[in-house]
Length: 329
Image (cartoon, rainbow, N blue to C red; front, side):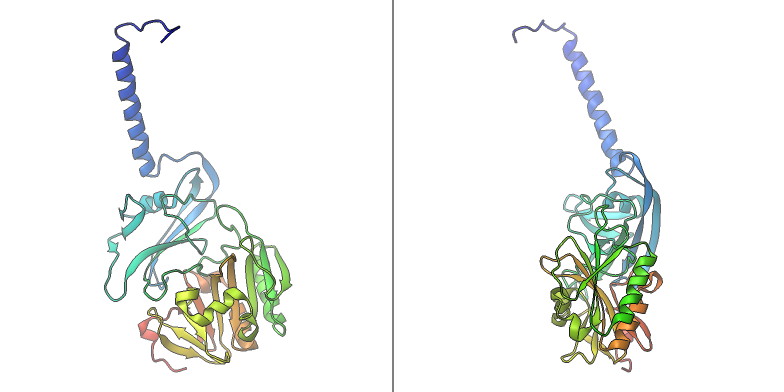
């Protein structure tokens, strides 16, 4: 080319050596990144990883990191703590610690949630944020192919939100349920969440984290809550109210009725309607049921659960397991 002096004869050899060195350094960086060492600078604050099975019924292992690095992904965190096998170029988790996807007794696979919210991208693409609670769960999906949100990371997503950003929390309460409403507000405030109030069934939106506290007769006016009546294939929640709202049907992992929770029972669940953000539902068949559900808003009672029923006899994680079928109502 014009204006350039000819290179000395040894230049091609130097260029080749430089190219080889660059390739080796790039390969080493990629290897380190795959091992979780190649991320960027550390940020103040860590993240938690939980591995469960059967809709959170069994905790297989829990671990944590004290610092999150820039660029660190959910997959890198998982691979750093567990033996992982993947498919489709690493985008799909096939096995964790030897527990593999299966087609027996209902298709079973691994799914993950960040702060209780269903992941919208593959684990290789999702970057960690400070405070994230990651839950990988191995469960069947024939009754519910999609579960938009779960309650088991509480007090997340109220504290850290999603993608490292807090989501404004809005409380909507039914008439006659002020005692339960104040209890929910007290518990959220106790973990540092600032809550605003609005009328029940006010306009929502993807930028809000809504908490509905009301008896089912009123709660069902909220579009996202109304999906519970159509079962887990729509709502992702393994419970639904009988016509008239006098009892809650508690479902097993196949979506079949396992038992009914009587009057005085409540439900704590989370879902998302089309065009809405995540909606938490604290409801019941009557005032006592709503108050029981409000009292269950506790990290120890909700931990790892997809949803819970608060009954006069105690708290039940949903979906119910086969061992609870046939129990007296």
